[in-house]
Image (tube, rainbow, N blue to C red; front, top):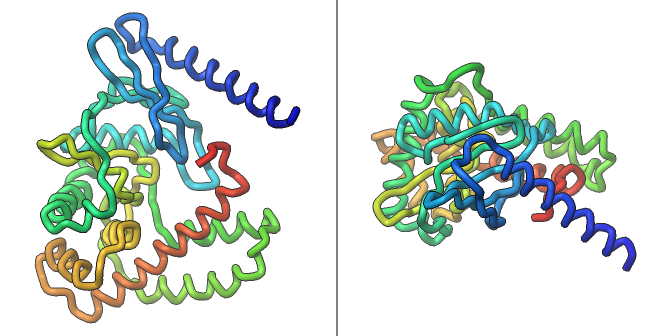
Length: 282
C-alpha cells in the first residue's frame, strides 16, 4: 500500500510540475485554465483555455527508442498546417507543442471503413505525400519500417526480453518482406494512421499527431491505415486503385501485402519495447 501511495503522490507532483510548466509558456495572453485531455501514447495532452480561445498542448520528450524526435514532429506539424492538413502551431519549445484546438470528434475504425470517409482520408494522405516536402524546414526523418524493426529487435535483445528467442525468426521474416517490397517511390508519410489521428469537425477532416512522420514508401501509410482499421481485401483493392489511379496488379499487391505484414510486425515489437521503456500508462 505504501508503494501505491508513493506512486500516486509522485504522479500528482509530476502533474503539478507540468501544469506550472504550461502556465509559464510565453504564448498566453493571460491566466490560463488547464485540463488533461485523454489520449496520448508518446506524450501527455492538455486542453488550455486562454481567455476566449482554446488550445491543445502536447508535452513530451524525445523517445529515441521509438525514433520519436520532437524537432521532427514540430517541423512536420508546421508543414501539415501549411498544406491545410493539421491545425496551426502556435508555439513550440523543447518538450512542448501548442496548437489551435479543433472542435470535433476523432474517428473510429468503423468510420474509416465507410467509403465516403475513406475517400476523404485518401485525399489527405495523397496531399501529405505530395505536398508536404516543399514545406518541411530543416532535416527530415526517414521512417523505414524495416530499419525500425531491426532497431526494436536489438533493443529487445539488449533488454533480455521474454520473447528474445523468437527474434531471429521474426527478423528473417522481416528480411523477406523487405525484399518483397522491392524498389519504392519516396514520399513524405504520416506513418501512424490510427483512426483516432483523424478529427471530423463536421466540415472537413484533420490529420493530427505527427510523431512518426518522415520520408517513406506510400505503401506504408496505406498498409498501416488498412491494418489499423480492419479494411477488407475488397476495400484494400479499392484503396490502391483510388490512390494509384490504376487497377492494382499482382506486383503492387505483393509489395503492399509485404508492407502490411511489416506494419503489423512493427506494432507488435513496438508494444514489447514500450512495456519496458514507456513512462506513460496507456
